[in-house]
Length: 347
Image 1 (cartoon, rainbow, N blue to C red):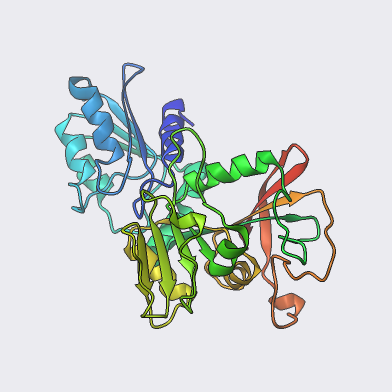
Image 2: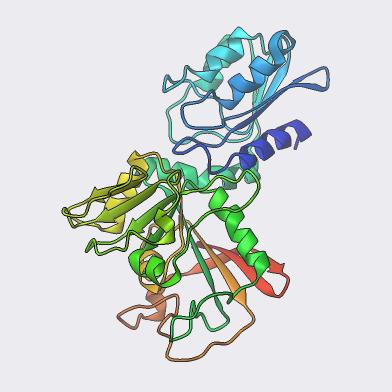
C-alpha cells in the first residue's frame, strides 16, 4: 500500500468519534513526491477532508495526486460534492481506499470524464474502519460499542454493590480514550445511583461525550454528579411525561415506548453516530441479547469475586440453547499491566 494512502487512512482514524453521522475521512495531496496538503473531516457539517487538503495545497494541487480514505462524494449535502473541488483544483490523479456502499455514486465516471486518472485500491484497514458506519447509515442507527469492566468470573460488582477499582488505572485511562472516540455514552438509572459516575474523558483536550440516561419511570436524582457540569449535555430518555429539567444542559426526551430501537433511532436523528454503552447488567444484557451491538469490549481484572452473581454482566431470564447463544469473535487482545482487554465482534 502507498504510504500516502496509509497516511490518509490514519488521518481518518484520528477523527473517529467527532464526525457524528458522517464518516471519518482523511485526505493527502502529493506533488512531486512531497506532501503539499493534508485534511480530515473534523465535524458534521464542516468541510470534507478533500476540501481541507486542497485548500492547504492551494496552487500546488494542480497536477498533483490526492489520496483519500473513502471514495470522494458526488452529492450535495451540507457541503458541495468533493469531486467538483478536485476537478476545480486541477488534480490529475485520485487514489482512494474504500467505496461508499451507502450511496449510488458515479464518482469514477465524473472524474474520468474530467481527464483525471482514478485508482480504487481496496484496503482492509479502510474496510474495517467504515464497515460499521455503512451498517449504521443504512439502518439509521448509531454504531454501538458495549464496554464492560469485570472480574474473571464476569462480575461488575460484589453482591453488596462494591465496584470501585475492580480493574486497574491503565484500564481507566483506556476507557477515557474510548469515551473520547464516541459521540455519546449511555447508561441506566441504577448505575448512576449506585456509582455516581461523571463519564468524562479526563485526558488532555479530550472530548467529553453526551451523557444518555435511560429511566422509563422518570424516577431520578437530579443532584448526582453527572448533572453538575453546566457545560456537559445530558439527555434522559423516559416514558414519564411529567419529568422535567430545571437546567439548560439537561434535556428530558419522552417516548411512548423506550425500547432500544426507538432510543437508538432518536439518537441517530440527533446526530449521534457512535454510541458507547457503559451500564450495569440489566442494560448491558439487553443490548447483548439484541442485534444492535457492533463491538463488545471486555476488561478483565485477575480477580474472582464469587457470590450469587447479582452483578454478573450478562444475565438472561431463560436458559438458552447452545445453538441460540450470541457468538463473538476476538479481533484484538491487549494486556494492560495485569488486566486483559478483549475486543470482540458478533459473528
